[in-house]
Image (cartoon, rainbow, N blue to C red; front, side):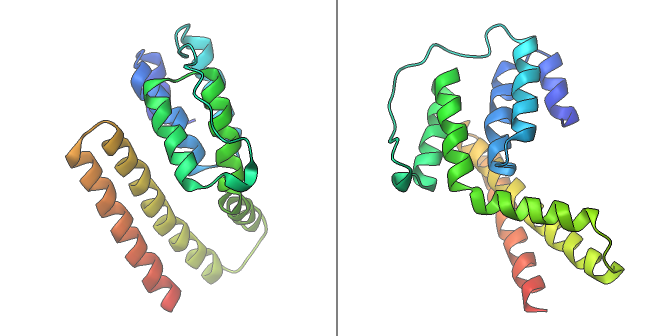
Length: 171
């Protein structure tokens, strides 16, 4: 778990803790770090979850897409319930399964021995992906919190990361 998340939990910052948990599935849709964070927060907050507002979403997986994922994520801002979080987790794992597979591949390649040049290129690509994904997470958080400066900073990260990825792919 990230130090900032632990600090937010220990500091009792419920809003930030909820954002960290919801954003984690966007960053790593495999769900392991998400579950660890959720379980840790559950031990510290008796009021982590809201009562579910019973809003329903499509249960047909063929209709699950990024728009639905972002809709549920945004709905979590106003109703952070166990039920909605469980639906969000299912949809994120389905919609972002390609990203999860990519993360698994990257993890496997890290554990196997490869030549230094290839490792360096992968590390650059991971860094650029991290900048891009991190920028997206910051932008979404800024938009959710109606913080223009934060959203602008996030969008700048997405643009810079995308340019770096594009330039790296052209090599």
